[in-house]
Length: 238
Length: 268
Image 1 (cartoon, helix red, strand yellow):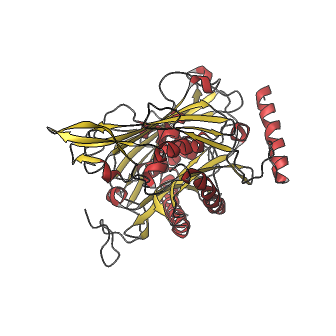
Image 2: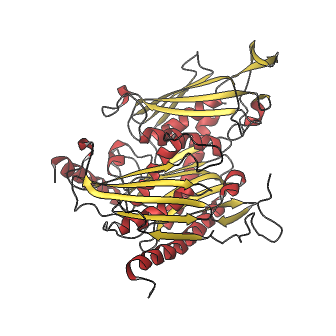
Image 3: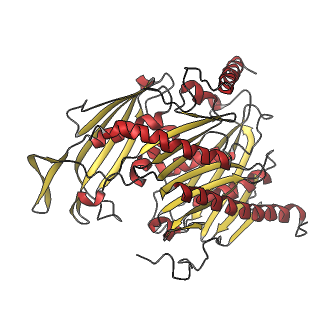
């Protein structure tokens, strides 16, 4: 078993307990998609592409009163150590659903009845926390596609490692740590739109873990904002 | 707007009106669950089984226990697999065929509750390390869908596990062989209890029925263990929660869970 934290409180990848991995986001990286983004979140490399609002196929899925949101989260076979079967796994189907439900509160689709906005996410390399990183990219890509939104959705996990609450769980910490809590948050509306937990937390740790996660989401938000600024207004961040 | 949308909106308005007075459509208080009845041993051919009714929701769950190969990276643990199916006879909208995303989420949330609380000591289910282990398969069949399938399936799974008997296997020539007539109790460490809450407007209601699920803004399922810790969470639905609301949900899930746990403990 790898040592997850040393006596100075430094984690196995050299970070402090409240430190995010390095994150970089590029907006508008795909030519065919209506909106797109590429995120590197630590060693995670993820693409998100948006199509729509466009006609719904199959037609029976269409809603007369609003546009609908669909999401496909997919991992490339080469994205993990052991080759992954390219067919969507149960895990990927569940993650597609929770990501869709995390983005839904942010998008305003009532003006696009009978249409769909498709969110396609491809995890090219996975290293723990892919659903959060994927959400961060998808949210920016939706903004890039010009979809009306109440707020960006920013996501980041918190968790418990070596009896301490830490920010942004990496792959080793996910495998061998005590708890992993992915959170997605709309920073301007103060709303949690994704929350899951694997692992055991006392009620006070639970509260601290959510607070830690939200603080991470707020940091991610600034990076998302900067990435959008860069594409649309050059480097002159106000 | 189409008719169905108008009716759904009227129903939501009515539900919200009642919630303002602290009431619900079916007469419950906000933090009351529907009546829960649990019968165990209903399928004698299974190693453990339960029929659970939670209001209008009914689940039949069977536990089958048989030797299997361990997961490649977990050679020192028995395997645990939990599935769920909404039978076509349970819901006019259910269709036979491969599971859709709702059903996959249901099975994975029930599985997570049992796995993450470490309800079973899987280390005790190893026959030969890395080669042969005992597998525990929990299959939930929803026979009547009346809302909050998460909690109903979770209680049925836990009840079936608590009341199951584990057959004895011996290794002969590196192969597991059943020892007839010898069984043991399952290696239970804690009792997970899942509590699902729906947010409708500003109100949090426990154990939503189908009417409430149809108009809820968001859903939160919190699983706690016997020691009062929080072990698994799943948020669902098309809106979110504030920080204060998720804290409030945990404060509701613990005492409601304790009450259900007392009912489950009697099955051991």
